[in-house]
Every structure is written in structure tokens, then in C-alpha cells.
Length: 329
Image 1 (cartoon, rainbow, N blue to C red):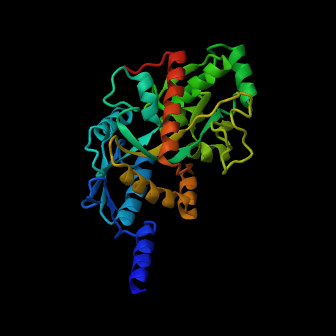
Image 2 (image 1 turned 90 degrees about the vertical axis):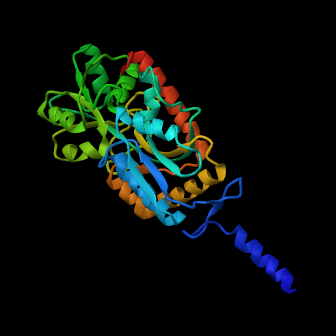
Image 3 (image 1 turned 135 degrees about the vertical axis):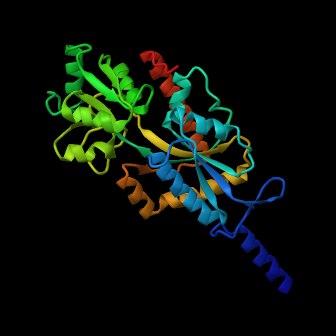
């Protein structure tokens, strides 16, 4: 009887889900993981949305795994330098990386990259999507998507839109809009979102896609007019605003997003454990509210679903870049 109870206790203990920092994961080789600090590669400079979400993820993993997860900012080349470093890191479970929509755009616009999306990564989870808002200067006689299309077709090349640089998501979102609506507008690239928005408020720029949270204060102040949200779903802080698709562009769905990956070949049980920790964080009301305050919608889809999402994103941007003839180098 005592032996049977001991067996039952052992089985119950070993089948419990991971709930604390003291619990480790055994790899295929039988080694306990983690046994040392983990590096979190963030392929953008400190202070931006990728850095903020990367540090949130690192903090959660540090607490959940019981070892320090150290953020390592490796900015440059639109995130490609840090992403290449991730691809070339050992697949031993001690490198975790942030990845954004920019890295699924890059294969479509760069002739040479130091990584391959289909070969070099283990996909962990999509942390969040960041809807973009199409806005117009108040002087532009357009209040919705149909008005913008009509104006653009009436004046081919007459409307001017801005972006945060060639090949960035605001640029590609508008090129996708142009391709799907058969319109032609003039692109003015800026070095960053702030000067782009400032010039749109001043009237030098008529249209732009920017992350919704960035332009929302200017919209509320009446300095910019909201036209539509870029995603299939409406933006919770402004639910009355139509999506681009609802405005008449069937199939339009695009946004910025933040995610977590690891080098290809990382043991599946380690990827699953990292996903488990992040998914638990992303389900909490506190995290979801914190993300929403930053204009982000928390996700947390599992590895297989995220890998399929990233593949669809890359395929989408290849088509957009080809149609618009967008190349960076």
C-alpha cells in the first residue's frame, strides 16, 4: 500500500505543469536546462517598441525559468544585424531573440541577407500586433477609404504620403494599399516616425500609415483625420473607426508586430517551455492592458501557428515589393 502511494505521488509530481522558477527542463540529451544565464537578442536600439516588449519578455522568463535573461540590443540595418546574430547562435537554448514584421519584409527588399526565415529559426510565439492607422491632413477632402481612392484616381500622382523610410512597414502598408486599389501616390521617406508625423500635421504630407497609438493623440486633438485601421479587426481604443477592408479594400490586413524566436535546432522541449512562460504572461489582464496602452494587441499563438503566420507574412510582402518595385540595396 505504501509503495503504491509513493508511485502515485511520484506520477502526480512529475505530471504537474511548470509553475515556478525552480523547475528545469530536460533536453533530449538528458541535461537540465536552464543551467546558466540566457541572452535575449533585441535587434533594435533601446527605447523602441521592440526593446520594451523584449525586456518584458526577458523579465518574465527570468522569473519563470529561475535564471537571468539578459537583454542584448544589437540594432542596425532595420533589425537585420541582430537577427543574423540570432541565426548564427548555438541552438542550445541559451539564445532567445525578438523578431518583428521588418524581418519578414527584408527578404523581399534586400538582395543579400545573413539569415533565411525558412531555415534558420525556431518560432516561439507572436507576442503582439500593432495596428496602424491611415490618417489624412484635415485639409484633404477625404473622410474615409472610398474618398481617398477617389481622390487618388482623380489625381494620379497628386497625393503625397510619408513613411519612416524605404522598405519600412508604413511604406509597405501604403504600397499594399496602392496595389490593391490601383492608385498612384508619391512617396516621401523620412528618418523616423516623429518627423513624418510632424510634417503631416503641418500639411506638407497628406496621408500616412503610422502605428495607431502614435497618432491617436493627434487624432483626438483634431490635428489629423482618421481614415481607417490597417488590421482586419477594429482598434479597441477607437472602435468606431472602420478597417481598410470595411472601407472597401477586400482582403486588406497588415500591421506591425513583435515576436519571439530562437535559433533553428533548439530542442523542441526548450522552445515549448519558453512558449509556455510567455503565453502565460500574455494571457494576464495586466499584460493585455499594458500592451493596449502601447497600441498593441496581445497574442500568444503557439509555435506551429506562429511559424505559419510568419511564412504568410513573408509571402505577402514579396508580392507587395514586386508590384511596387521596392528595393533597398
